[in-house]
Length: 82
Image (cartoon, rainbow, N blue to C red):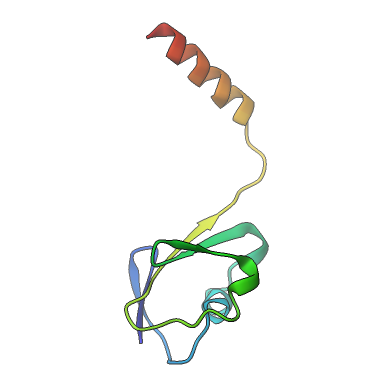
């Protein structure tokens, strides 16, 4: 079966679930969100969501830390300058 993951085609065996794919990719499942064919799939449904040929999976990784406050402040200043 061919599945597209973040735009890249992957050749996989039949009968896999979304959770199987995430495990094959060795992803930290606590820090990701998954979309299947443009619909967000809840974490509780990953194991029961079968993959089919030509499915499109988008995986977003969440990264902790950073300086969101500074980004928010910069955006506020830029919008006031317009």
